[in-house]
Amino acid sequence: MRWYHYVSYFCGGAFLANAVPHFVSGITGHPFQSPFANPSGVGLSSATVNVLWGSFNLAVAYWLLYRVGKFELRRTVPVLVTGLGALLMAVMSAHVFGRFYGGNF
Image 1 (tube, rainbow, N blue to C red):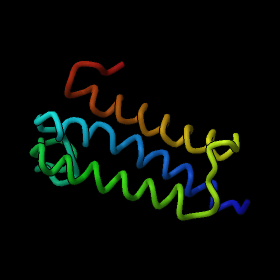
Image 2 (spheres, helix red, strand yellow):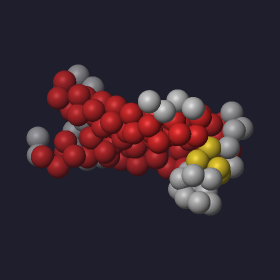
Image 3 (cartoon, rainbow, N blue to C red):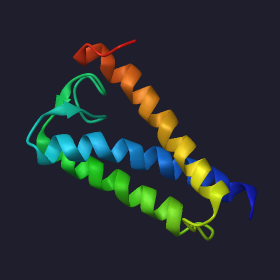
Image 4 (cartoon, rainbow, N blue to C red):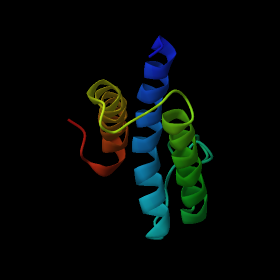
């Protein structure tokens, strides 16, 4: 496997983790921070914007995971690299959004 496949899987995991809070907030009807808010990443975007942004992140994750290289769930290293990307994005999101919701460590 080429080195850039691992970069793609790492980024795919990050996009996958980023899709979750936006999509879930959107489909439950709650506003949430997004790059399209004013100010960017701080203000709240509508539920519809978050559903669209979450769906876009999911599509990018799919493309990075399944259209670059040969990602297989039975292969340990690609799954670990993807999980590392998702974990890093989740921890960064918890830190950033913890400022707004009182969960900052």
